[in-house]
Length: 371
Length: 198
Image (cartoon, rainbow over all chains, first blue to last red; front, side):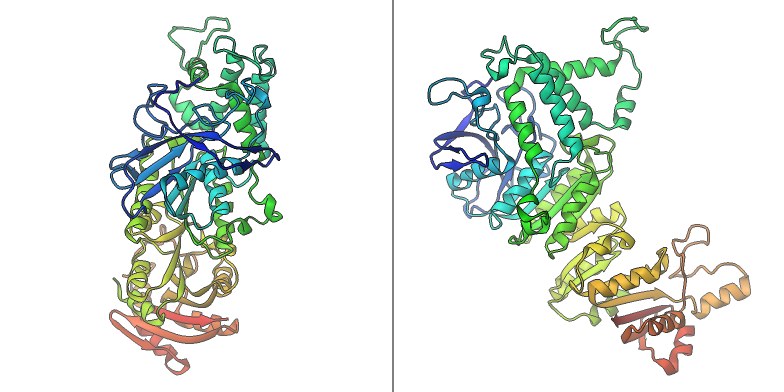
């Protein structure tokens, strides 16, 4: 899936015990950085990517030749100003952009496929914490991410309460809901129902379960948008035709759009990684270890939190973000919260939403000034 | 900064933890943070005002005092401030109870409907009073439960809430309100400021 060139990799020598009980060691974490680390090493921001993201946060992704997934938010003079901050982002383990995942080979040189250990959000952040040692960073200025990136933010500060000054989870949840799990299961079923999947033992790009993966992406993509946003953009507009064709081609623009989204996704993403990462999201329930008391997950941190949600996000709705605010307030933590007005659905955090980007920038810059 | 905020700030000692309920654009918060080293949080319902607070580097939570105060533990702040908003709630009594649960002390200010200009306006013009502290028309005012300094004074007493300090504010002058001068203050102050505890 990935061409090895252009991918920076850290080989983690230290064994990492995974939640499933297995231990991995000498495994690669693929990462990218933007901006430069200052001499005090106090300007680093660790960005966590979402389900289908990767380490190429901004600028042109050298593998896909497309804009990085957070180009609106990260770059010179942007919300995360790379003139000022040193941004680190790594591909999650289980992913397919160079970090240890199911498309890698096991010690017997066989591709893992579904023999790769099941990983969790907890495993992901424990693996990524090694990057701090690699760069000699004692304490990050901030950690941030949206969606699954936000889950990693919450898990990271819970595991490493002293490792970041500020914490910015965006459009996220502390626990995957039944609806979240249901949508992920739909995607997984689409993949495993594709006869090319072969229990995860497909071997080349030509014979991969692309159809199943495309359907998974199409279904998921709908959950990232709002009804209003879809209606305004597509409505019942027809795709390059004057009238209905009374067949099953893509008559409507929305059909064509989803098919396109599915097809381009297949070119850049591994089906087994999709299974692994969605599983990690479904297993995410931060309060579970603390007998259901979410506040206890944050009891040891003095970090300053800023939580952001979006009005039209029905995948990780405002209430689920507010539950995190409530848990933090009940232990007197320093927490700010804003719900941004947007009709772009869950995807709002990735898009040009000025109120979001200005709040994000103001919080970061003002917090950095107070440093 | 308006005089009201100066009077409120004078009631708060240095280094305390304060919640500003309905903190608007954060003017009072910024002042308390800069001048009294206050660990300050705000709760604000308006998205635009929340953005203004964030731009000032203030910790603010977007929310509604009637629903969102309950997330704060008992006595988790030294002071809770509510400036000129009590009359705008559907249930001011419930909000007052919440302020006094969350804060060790509360500072509540109310626009005084007993102020002579208000009384004269209604008496002479026969229309709902519009003044500097009550600038809205009857049809677009957020105020649902207007009261006078006297009303609030009696209300607080009836609920066994301790009044540490009550001040009458008229333009730049503030003066102490007590049982004996209540009638006069109720006529000549356009704002009442109360430091209370339960």
